[in-house]
Length: 222
Image 1 (tube, rainbow, N blue to C red):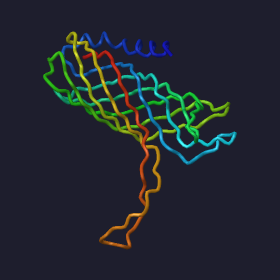
Image 2: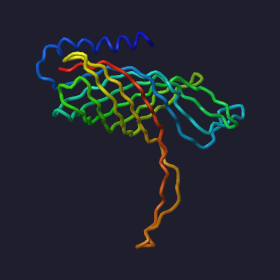
Image 3: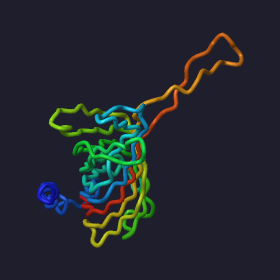
Image 4: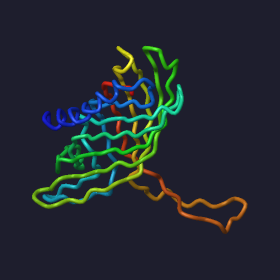
């Protein structure tokens, strides 16, 4: 795990010489590492053997790492891309209260983001806020020797933090981020249009899996 993280940050650091060679700042690259608190969704009770019924599945909270790449369209607005990976596991809640880990699982987030940076471009400290749209990919490993099927779901991401620049090109960035991922919808009843009583349809209650990430990274401006 440590080796993968070091290789990841090492590959991104190859871009630093190009960052230092520029005079006008149009791009910010931030490799980061942090921790993600995750939660799952309730499911219909499912027999997993020995009479045990699982009624909720969740990714476990775990280490996360990734990068953000922003193009600075103006002094305050940026548009970019955020990628993160969480080295988690798939956990089931057994009816009665106990829990069981079924498999290791990678969770990858891919989001296009829009960022608002507060303050002036030359300010050493710049709070920021962002929001974005994209997808979350769940990739579980084998479960008791059997291959498993993951999936990709629509998700949004929202957050903010602060950047503190120790030089013109390099800064420290702290970020808090919330990523709700749509998993499924449960039947929520029937809704009828009060103006057209014959117009009725089934409505659903959406179920989301939430990720709450706290991270820190080094920002390179170029």
